[in-house]
Image (cartoon, rainbow, N blue to C red; front, side, top):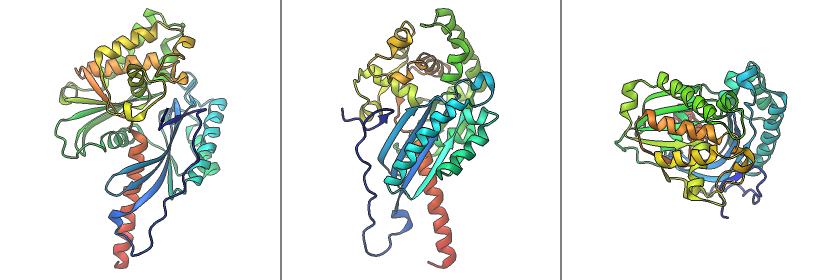
Length: 354
């Protein structure tokens, strides 16, 4: 199907060898490309991006994977990461580590987000990722997650873009909002509303009852309203939605049999379309949702909550549509890693008089 992103269980071509550096004079730091491996360990999914990144901010994808691992199962109720959930993630990270090695990556980073932040045993789990798989694993706070997401979502846009935008990142345990224009971020907040968290909290029936969906909607609306000041809500002229909820809704709207990143990236979802898709999905059982074209089966349990959150996010900003971006935290973390490395290299070269 020409799928660029491969989900759990999908076949993948052999990883390409790393691109050799041509012989000859050393290139200036600003012209060099670095092959980066980024692992994003989230509440609902564990993702991999291997990419060649230039100092100018160009990202060329080599490998991209998403596996639904549901690390956050039960965290909202118990306050700890469940052993079986951790094992699912670690098995996926082991597979990703082999791919990273095969791709000839020169630098790696793993970012751990909401579920690990919230769990009492989160830091022990992060240490295990570092020690067992050699990844530079760090748990990032909500502000850093929001900043990196904005960087990734807007990296393809001209830096001089004038209209302020809100980037909406709906995750398993939290939803991030970042408002900015060009390279400048004027506001960001991480809210405690996530598709795993709120599915567990509100949707007990299969299919969910109207009362359950209404309760979830009211909870999300209250959380967003409490965290987004009126002046911030009025400041964004456009929206960019990233991550699995938004890309899944776009794929459903496009009626894609196989996920096509180039079709999803840049697709526009209207508020009316989101409401129509929500009504359709909420009327189905979990087993029926697993057969909806455009929706990966592993996202079926949480997509109703995700659709509610995207609708409420657009509503609170009084926007009637959003652009969908296939680029998000993974790309932002890759860009940040290379920028930091090149800055350090430049400082070392300056000290040596190069």
